[in-house]
Every structure is written in structure tokens, then in C-alpha cells.
Length: 316
Image (cartoon, rainbow, N blue to C red):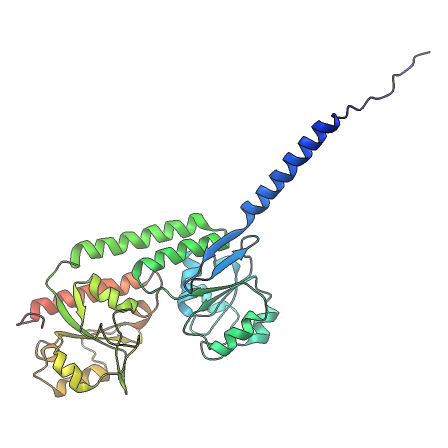
């Protein structure tokens, strides 16, 4: 008869088991800590996710562009009106606009991250969003490099850092080339017209003012408050800018003059009018603080270079 020895299980000594269990617990804790993602948004608030976001809603057109550029397109489940770039963004479910959000639709889409325009979305509705207990990332880039920083942060929240970091590097390279070419050119004084009735402009804290500086320009109303101040025609005449720039609804042909620019021809003594330095730039390229602003900046730099060649007097 053949006898089989009973199977033997080896158990570690008690003190060894405790040591192993403790090490395993520490490893799990470290893994959990590593999985958590924490960034600081543009309001200075800390945003923490337990894992990369999988269902993201954008509450501003520039945010939509940032999210796609950061590699988050496949994770987008909703966006506000006018989120039209890239083209696939047009297919996203709409959740309202910057004035009125569809909170029921937002809830139904079950987001795990909502990216908000800090000063563009209605404050009362933002308070309602907070009640949903969904992480909010507030976006409001103020300087050109803030766009690259935003891409990097969003990439971390989305788990798409490779794509986001590449997009950030490409954007920085585009801006660096423009800065090297234009920033030290002779100054051109610029009035940037946001609206005509009432007449409104931008101060030096706005990103467009940063673009003007990048191109070797000088915002004649940089020192005013608030961010979008109202000015008078007399103030513009007194500043006597060498160039007047505004945003157009889409690219404008050289032979097309927007009414708000053509109005200035009533003052032929104005330097910008005398030298025909009245320029319109595609609003989607210059107004949205997203990677395509590099294209708007390139156009503005070219316009200001043209203004230099036409101007007969130095910037005041």
C-alpha cells in the first residue's frame, strides 16, 4: 500500500506576518495616494479627483477647445452653445450657454468633472452646480502662458498628460517664435475696441492686451479699470492710437470694413485713420483663451507690422 503524506502549508511566523501585512497596507496606501489627482484651478481652489475624469462637461467655448487640445475629446459628454471647435464638438449635447445653464441636463449626463468659466457663467447657477458635489475646475487664463499651464493641468485631471504636455509645448513654441520676431519692434499704440455702443475696450490685465504686447504694441487703455472698461470717443481721440483693432465674426477680407471700424473715418486726423490702420481679426482666434489664440496673435502681429510701415509718426 502506498501512503501519501498529508499536504503541508507553511505559515510565516507571527511577527513575519505582521511585517508583511504592514508592508502591504503601506503599499496600498501609497497606491491610493498616487491614484489621487490634485491641481489648482484659476480661482486658486484645489481640485482633487480620485481617478482621471471619464465624463466631462465644458461650460465655455474656450474650455471646450482646451479640453480637446489636452486629449479629452473622447471624455466629453456635454458643452455649452457656441462650442464649435474642433468640428466634432458641434455634436456634443448642449447644456445651455454662459447666461443660462440647463442644470437638469447636466445632472442627467452624470459628469465626474465640470470645467467652468470663472467670470462668464452666472454666479447663482454656479452655486447650484456646487450643490451637485461634482468637482469643478474654474478656467480663466489671463496670460498667454496660462493656456499652456491650463493644458497641463487638464491633462492631469483627464489622465491624458502625454497629449496635453505635447500641446502645451507646441503652443509655447508658437508664442516664443512670435515674441522673438515682434516683441522688440518699434512700439505701435493700439486701441482695442470690444463694442461700439457703449464704446468698450480691454485693460492691461486681459489676455488680448498680452497679445498686443507680444506683437510690440502698447494698449493705450491698459491702466483703466475694470477688465472691460467703457471709454468715450474723446478719450480715444486724446490717446490718438496708431492702430485700432476689433474682433470680427469670422475672417474678414482686406476689402471689407466692419461698421464699427468705418465709423472712425469721421475723424480723419486720428493717426489710425490717417494711415488706414483699422484692423479686424477673427473673433474666435483672438477672443478665446485657447491654443488657437496663437493664430490670432500671428494675424495681429502682421497687422501691427503693417501699421509700422504706414505710420508717419512715432507712438505717443
